[in-house]
Image 1 (cartoon, rainbow, N blue to C red):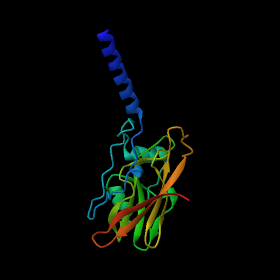
Image 2 (spheres, rainbow, N blue to C red):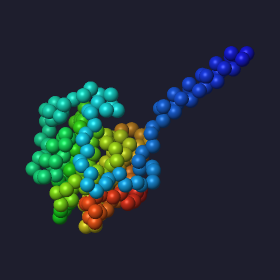
Image 3 (cartoon, helix red, strand yellow):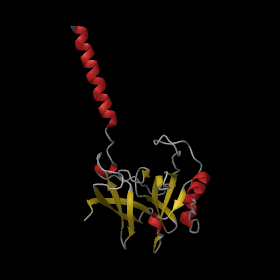
Image 4 (tube, rainbow, N blue to C red):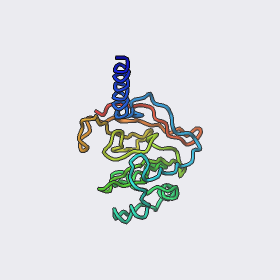
Length: 199
C-alpha cells in the first residue's frame, strides 16, 4: 500500500512537471517595463542560427542565397548591423529614417518562407547605436514578434503580436503598442516607456 501511494505521488509529480514544461514562457510584454538598453552599449552579436529553434546552423550566405535576399548595406546603420553578424533588412520593406534617427532590422535566421527569425530591430541616433526594440530575439508569427514601427517627432512606437495557445499562426488574438523615448542626455539610448493595447 505504501509503495502504491509513493508510485501515485511520483506519477503525479511527473505529470505536473510535464505540463509545466509545456507552458509558454511569460513574455517581456507581460512584465513591468525595465530598461534593457544602456548608453554606450555595443551592438549585440546574433544568436547561433539553431539557438532555441533546434534548426541546424545555417550560414548567413546560405540564407541570403536560399531566400534571394539583397540586404541593405548603404547607410552607416545598415553596415553596422551587417558587420555585427546580422543580415540587415528593412522592416516591412520600408527604410525607416527621420532626422538623425534610423531603424534597421537584423536577422540571423529565415524560416522556410524566408520570414525573419532570431531577429531584432536596432535603433541608431546620430549614427550611434542606441538600443534594440525587444530585449530578446524575435521570430515572425510567434508571440511578441514585431509589427509596424514608426518614428515620431519625440518618440518611437512599435507594435507586437500577442498569441494565445489556440491562435493560428496567421492571426494573433491581439496586438500591443510599445512607446519608446530617445534619451540624448547620456547616450543616446532608447528607453521603453509604455505598453498599451492597440486601438
